[in-house]
Image (cartoon, rainbow, N blue to C red; front, side, top):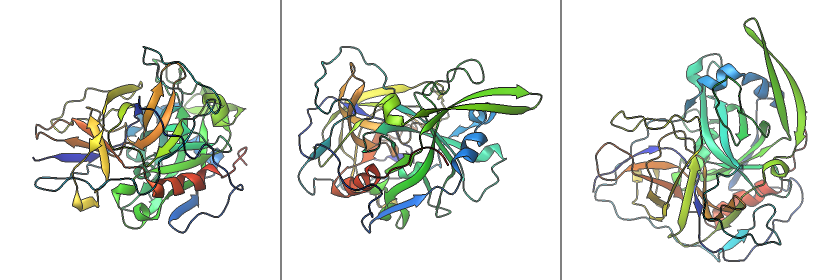
Length: 372
């Protein structure tokens, strides 16, 4: 079978019971990370990043799609498998409680859009204004965002992106600032990724966890051709929108929902999504074929027509609509055209194993606080 893929990431949420194991994250604040975890503070000052993203620029930001094409014709299946016992960390608010399932699919407040500018490039050029999807995640200090590594790190320029912010529950209304940031804006402090993605560009490690400062709500007013702002501190991300749980070394066959903000075109030019509102898919994952060009051997995926812009959103298992919470079992990394008709029909995520948990644990114990 011939397949082509483009690098994107999407949120998923599933309906599979979680295997109890880890329970909670523990450890000292800002503990030293293992040698295979890359943790680096954002170079752009937080206030500068938030000021950069005026309503006009947010409106013009484009979905991040760097046209990655893969072929899996005649290539064996992936090698994803647990490398240790399964584990899980519960969502915020469900540490000691159980929530009944709902028959309706309620969109999670934790999911939103991340905005950034390409590094070593002119930030005034709209071509360098990009966005992905992401989700708030459980952590000791309730300051954690999960996304794809290619939504935080540029492998071509070998550095992290600039002006990186997260807006949970993003909604693009008809007015230029209407509804865009109902729970505030959260600027990056520390990026956490696996060394094999940063150094080797290995897409089996295409995940990242970002510590963000406490959020602010911004009121924008336009005077002539310039924007002026006033701000209000709204506190920690997890206190405002909650945070998804985290799980690793699970089965490769999980029932999942996928949430994100797709906006890109299919290979045939069709553009079914706008990126203005959150969308979702539902399906059962399976191991995906190997894509040697990008060291991709351990991805799980399922049938979904999402396009670029959904990159980085959460793949969640055991999702409950009543609480809008589940367990992060992946982040979308690649969109596949498995039947060769120039339309993407599957999305995939790196398989979350013990290596993933190491990166998560390092990030989950980092404190941030208010913006300096």
